[in-house]
Structure formats: C-alpha cells, structure tokens
Image (tube, rainbow, N blue to C red; front, side, top):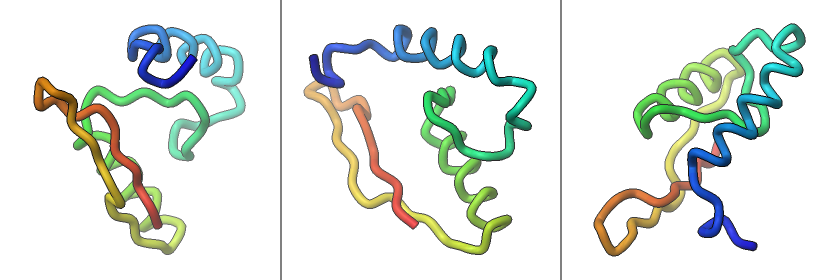
Length: 78
C-alpha cells in the first residue's frame, strides 16, 4: 500500500479518532501525527506560527501536482 492508495477522507477519519483519544493531552498548538487541514494555506499558517513560537523558520522544500493540476503533496522543512 502506498500513500496514493489512501484517500484524504480515510486518513482524516483515522486522525480524528486518534485526536479524540488524546484531545485532553494536546492543546492544539503543537504539531502531532495525523493532523488534517482544510487547505495548504492553513498548513502554512499553522507551521509558520509554530516556528515563530519555537524560534525557527520554515519553507516548502518540494511539492507535486497530479495530472489534474491539483496539489497532491508538499514537503515542509525548517
């Protein structure tokens, strides 16, 4: 199985279950495995704000679009 075999809806459902299990331990301001965002801009905003709080910058290292010209993934680095 590869990442291409998993739909975003399936992944978000799994992450929602994980987040509900540990919601009392996480205040929502720190990154955690399985987080889902509504858009690329919300991802960038979240990690930019987190980087400012922790004292590092971030940028997009690479990204890939599908044949339909929709963004498939992007990699952030600090």
